[in-house]
Length: 500
Figure 1: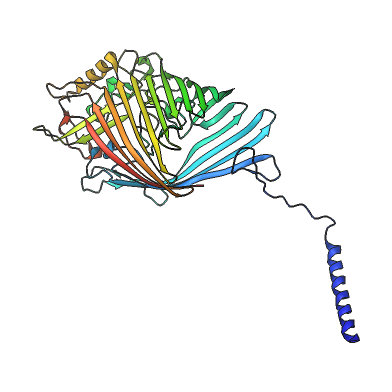
Figure 2 (figure 1 turned 90 degrees about the horizontal axis):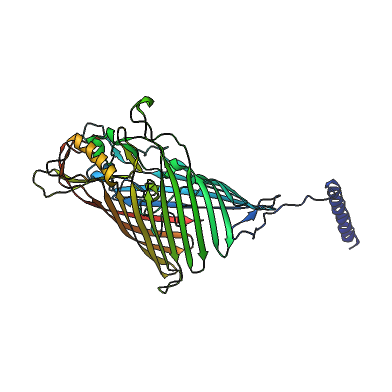
């Protein structure tokens, strides 16, 4: 027993000696470990960057989608090989996209300093290009192994009421192009959902009322076309181009003002924009002269109504816009500004029918001043929640384009010079575009949504009679007589999206 006790005491002494030796080698005070802490100042999802008083939030989404009866994700079959409606037209197109955004905020004596960055990595299947003649000239574009693209949507700083950098336009309604839809090409209002470079000051007047004034880059999203009608060609007109493109350099940014009331019942917003039309020369040399600048403008009203009797979370979004020399505020950044749509015909001697149209800010001819283009439009949607996992939206849009007496005369004189209209045909570049659609979404688990969106579009062009058209190699359309006729198209988008 004495022997066992001695062994235990001796072993304990050895262990204590080893522990004491290791303790002697340790620093006197262990360095504190910095943990990531939740930042509750700016809502959920924010964390303090360790060692700083700056909060950061990471977000984004991953999206997979297929568009049908269109050559773009996601617009209508309005022009090019899509509008040709033949064997060169894609019957479907696919896209995969990852979005990543970074939001940082720091409280200072001047208020919150915020930076925001949003970028997308996209892969989109290509479209057919070439003559379609069977000679090997036709190819697909965009499907190479490295065919993906990177896009920067937003990159801005907010400080003391100022927004500096690439952000959604102050003119836009809060839903930009999407009152209830996924369809990108909806007309009837402004939409810069990919961001536009700007310098904006926003004043918070209290009670949910804000007012802002902004200087914004006009070239990215707010310019359609300035046409010199002296350059009209038959092939150009068939593509919706009423002359040669005649932009001068940039002189002034667009000047925008906005007032918004945002309260529990919904939202009301009034926006105004001034847009400088600065054309190039009448001819190839500066000695040919040029038209003087002419300012255009746009005005928009937007209304959102919440808490409607049809169900919890249901909402109505509406807006209307008028433009004079600033057509992009109606035909937003992702909408077409040229249309060339083909269809069938029952006219004897005609090969097919065609509807063509173009949207411009202004037109001019040799020695004339700028004639601005007037448009008006509206769009809206009603979204109904069937239950917490299912909702549907019915949406629509309408836009009119009017060239006025001077603009129409310049365009029609150029078209007459090409001798493309048959005897008895009438020339009128004005047109209307109507769109209506329905979308249904299913969210089986939080953050994951599947949707199906169908859109019908009607081009109401104002020409009548027939046109003697030259061959269009890019769409394999032969030289022939085509009936001038309104056109229709239907598109569909299937999408799966995981937000995080």
